[in-house]
Amino acid sequence: MIVGLVRHYPVDLPYPRKRLVSGDEAAAWFAAYDEAPIVPGRTDLRGIAWERCVSSDLPRAVRTAELLFPEPGRIETRAELREIPLPGLSGKLRLPFWWWAVWARLTWKLDRAAREEMASAERRVRAVLDEAMSRPERSVLIVSHGALMYEMKKELAKRGFLGPRFAYPRNGELYVFTL
Image (cartoon, rainbow, N blue to C red; front, top):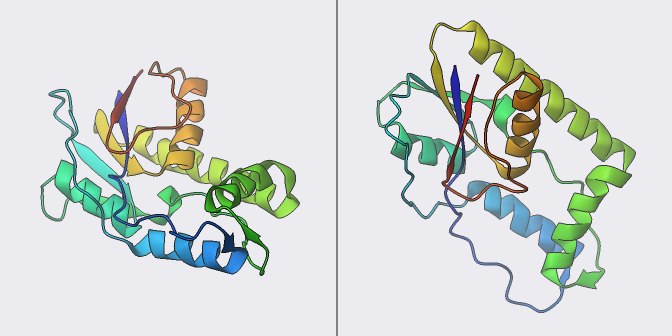
């Protein structure tokens, strides 16, 4: 079996221009990111005849999947493939924007509610991969998001798949895992 993981193409949304942004402003930017258009790119699908395409149901992933798998009506969208939600950002405290992003990622490890979100993401990944492996198709292309792809990579390795190592996947790059 072959599983291809692709992170959506880059989002067309500039970072906030202000040197310091509040938690409320950072939260608004991340909400806008979820709805922003993508900047289409090129992805080398390595000549693999992908039999099936499953995508996160967020617009940036769906649009990427449509560009990679241009068979109308054949892309399956799944809420289970959505990015792991960031912990709530709010307040008037002003920090450089990238500090908010780092803080949100660190919170996944430190905050109890955020750890529960991570556990939920792991369960969602297992469910999607269980379903993919139970189907007759031998090649599936999965279009998703960075942190969730990292979790998928770990789960695929647990299941005996061989594939590339990555700390954080690049937008639009194909990562192929074989069993």
